[in-house]
Image 1 (cartoon, helix red, strand yellow):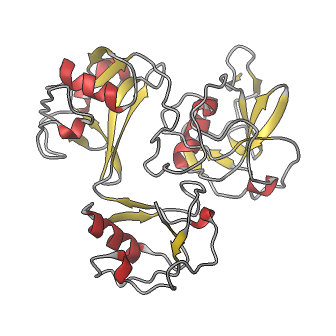
Image 2 (cartoon, rainbow, N blue to C red):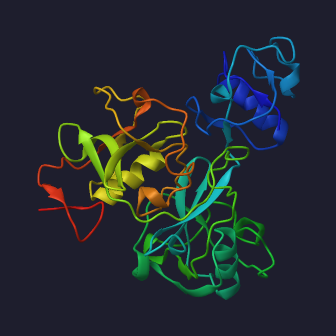
Length: 333
């Protein structure tokens, strides 16, 4: 894929891309480096669309191939027809309540017409092993937001749930106590995972790490501050390349600190020295430990400590005291 620099890029340019691809309209601009650096030529820079063009190359821009960018400035776009799936509230990534992201919003799937074939498609779509069982909301809890899919009918040959027959998106006669959940056999992620929708071309690889202890350091309490992981008896930091709210939420969940409230790119607290353990982190948002997320190999990075990630969680952290030796990454009273 040939790359485009984000100089002067805005929502008008996004909309041209989505229209050209037949993917609806642009949902939002992505922050710089949302998908991490990639390789290959950068063909377009200083793109200035009016928003009415049918093709991106109809927009004014710098001459083809002329730019002053690096791949950390590659443009990313999310369109309204983009869809994702995840399993949440399970013991591992291959079980939990079924949630689907559509039109920029995470919602749920109704259990009413979800049977073996539909559940098998879900296991396949989230890159897990064979189906073990499927459940209603009593197993993994009721969700929130839209109920996106109801009245599904699959033949088990589909690769995604939305290739199955169903009612129109958002049309249903369910309540959240009917949210569907599935349990699949856990499986190794593929060598290169689609993960977030725009991971193509990055250097990240799936790998199995131990569930590393984690803390937030330097903030106003134990639920805010610089993200640090403990490995080989050394606390190290996490680089902000590709970091977003899904990654921050995994940190807050691991610490029992609620949801992420704020996750800026560069830390406004004094930088530290020492190891940088993780870079190009790309969580789905459902992981129980940050070290389970897709990332560059441990200790490999192109960052300095000015790029250390900080996270502020919704819990105030006042009742936390020290790392629990029994539950790595959690804080006990």
